[in-house]
Length: 148
Image (cartoon, rainbow, N blue to C red; front, side, top):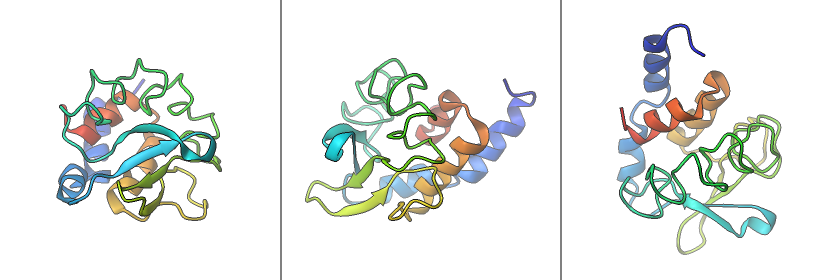
């Protein structure tokens, strides 16, 4: 899809600069919930890539691009850029909510720059903006999770 893979990798790395370290530095797990009333658990945004609940566990329920509810599945509800409940929909109005285990709200993970209460966590804003620009969830998840 991309004519210059190195340029893509550089731009994603620049856009996400420090995201993994920023996310890991969070002392509290950032949990993602989507669906009606935000009751569907979509994974942990800043947990280690080998943790079962991590969106970075490529073999887990939440990090695999083959799982129906994974944010990395471009054909699933939460991975499709066309679904209103996906973080990658630039016009979406029902993006997943980011909370911690105590229920503190950190905003919505959304590529919609105009969505009220969109997260202000810099690394996650960069993630959604990179998704909008590059339109390749596989490469984006690799960059976000620092797999390559």
